[in-house]
Image 1 (tube, rainbow, N blue to C red):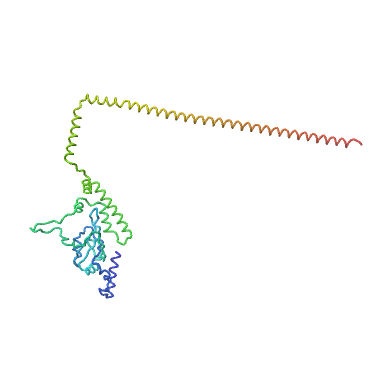
Image 2 (tube, rainbow, N blue to C red; image 1 turned 120 degrees about the vertical axis):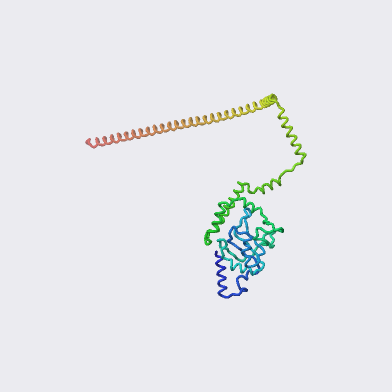
Length: 345
């Protein structure tokens, strides 16, 4: 939408200033006769594009870009005119025009052809789906594989949502390109799911199978058929008694092996049980010894504590006796001194 406005603004300024065609902004694209056409409806074909744009000159090449898997139009195309001046007319007149309810964007472009692409005139006969043959009979245009696949496949819900988004969403919304990209991814996934469900892409699978198919000679096939018939005949000729005897022989032959296998399994299980019991016994012994050591340590600590307490009590008793003795000796000294003072000299 911004590009359309820019083109209209440039044309308006040149018209007001009276600029000649040689000095116009179109002169920057004199080296290319291609134009870019965007915003096309998805139902428009190459013939419709040639019909619309042939009013401004003679188209000699048109490339409507389609999806590689579905073959549906992506909504934009490249067109080449025989005369480069026709590009100026198409850009000035068709940029911003409406085609089937959609605003079309037209601008100059320098087309880069793909590898192996030939820019030959491919517009001859476009727009005519049916033509008359030499005898006046109606001859239909050749149907491509993608078109036949599109006719077989119905329009999916995601494709309808994408068309609705492209048709009705505001072009000025900056999120439009992101929404269109996400919806195209959903359309591709839906188409792949439909093809996987309904056998789409079976042609490729058939080609791969055909490529890797092993072709054998008739003699090899005959030998295989003879061997198969011989096996069936040998299987049919066995009587029930023979089958029972064969089964008994198989059981008798397999019995020693089974017995050895069972004995080995039994020995292994017994070894595992024995090891587990030993492990449990060792763990129990360790726990008991640990408990015994812990009890001995507790008893030793208690004995040491009791000894310390007795020692402290004895010390306390000795100190008290010493204190009493000192008190008694002090009292005796005091009484002796008193008697001396009282007696006459």
